[in-house]
Image 1 (cartoon, rainbow, N blue to C red):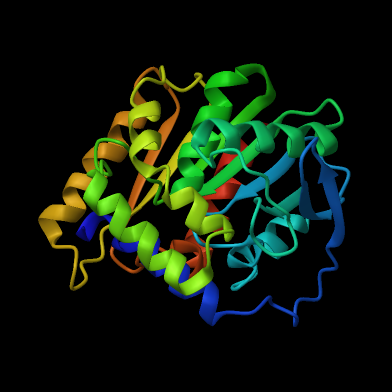
Image 2: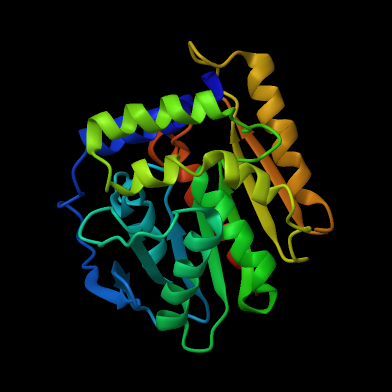
Amino acid sequence: MHKLIPFLASLLFLLSCNSNDDSKVSFTESFVQLSTHKITTYSVAANSNYLVVFESGLGNDHTVWQTKNVAEAISAKMDVVVYDRAGYGTSTIDNTPRDINRLRIELEAVVSKYANGRKVILVGHSLGGMIIRDFAVKNPDLVAALLFVDPSHEYYLHPTQAEEDALYNSINSSAGPDFGGTREARELMEDSQYTATLPNLPNIPVVVLTSMQPDPTHTTADKQNLYDAHELLKSGVTDFTHIATTNAGHFIMVDEPALVIDNFNLLVLKLQ
């Protein structure tokens, strides 16, 4: 169960935080209308060569990227979109399984609305790392670069049915059956099996940030296993940067926002 603790932490983080209303950056609220439900988006236009889309982890809405102004800092020079997946914030939800394949399809719809022919730089945290990975594999010509922030990986996260049930029941009791995180937790076993079948990432610049900070539920050895799983993302990628930090827990963008911003800027430099 200890490997599923970050997902519970994500839920607690979401329930204890509000949107960053003090930001001086004005994000425009809109939505992407799908055939069965709508996805609420928040964007800033800067007329940049690339579109940046942030993908949150299980249990977190878009505001996790604004808690320490990471999205705001990047939006100073780049077109940025943050959004709430189905069942988060004001995004509605349908009855389809909320698995990685479905979440990737909905990310494709968001990118399609805002890209306007440009390539996208995807930033994904935790479960969001699996989503952007699937997007990149399925849409290699649309992606310029990837930034993974302590992403989930099937060789580290492979829950049993009992573990998935325990997590699902915990989130369901806190947030209800139609909360996005509840529905996504129901698919964790399937997500791990699905991502294990994915081919290598496209050969584009990739940066991975891994939290190596031990905590009561993750030993140094356990964190090393996570690091080793993240190392597998470099297969077939010639421009791969992997950075470990002991200064941040799972929410690197909250504990060490400058690390995320600096490495995003590194990716942009690689594209020039």
